[in-house]
Amino acid sequence: VEGLGVRRAIIRTGVVLSLDGGALPRQALPYQLFAGGPLGSGKQPYPWIHLVDEVRAIRFLIENPSTSGAYNLSSPNPLTNGEFGKIIGKVMGRPSFMPLPGFAFKAAFGEVTVVVLEGQRAVPKRLLDAGFTFMFPDAEGALRNLYKPQKALATR
Image (tube, rainbow, N blue to C red; front, side, top):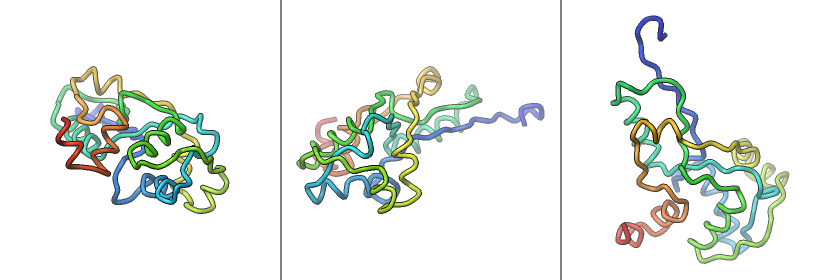
């Protein structure tokens, strides 16, 4: 494609945080039932990005003619699954102590669990170097925006 003079930006995305589907509603369910905790070992990388930043980053790559090649679309502040789970509990006002074995999570929620249980560490270095700025660079702010939007916007 590049040989034809066509610019190509390839995105590798983390878990996109949205309440309208994907991994987050399924991952948050145990917390709603006061039974939240790390999934599997909790030590696996958990690359994540807020839906707003995902859309903004894609638009940035489309509109910026100097961007080409591969870009990680994930928060500049990577976490482990266990760290992310503690933040879910904090934002929801629920405990985060009960680990959920990987096989149980997979049996309950199916294919989406592969991303959560076998995460890869990803940082958006090239995206940041190109000049992109995140609205939600930290997990607590991103989750507060989703679960308590008025309060999160008032503190920005």
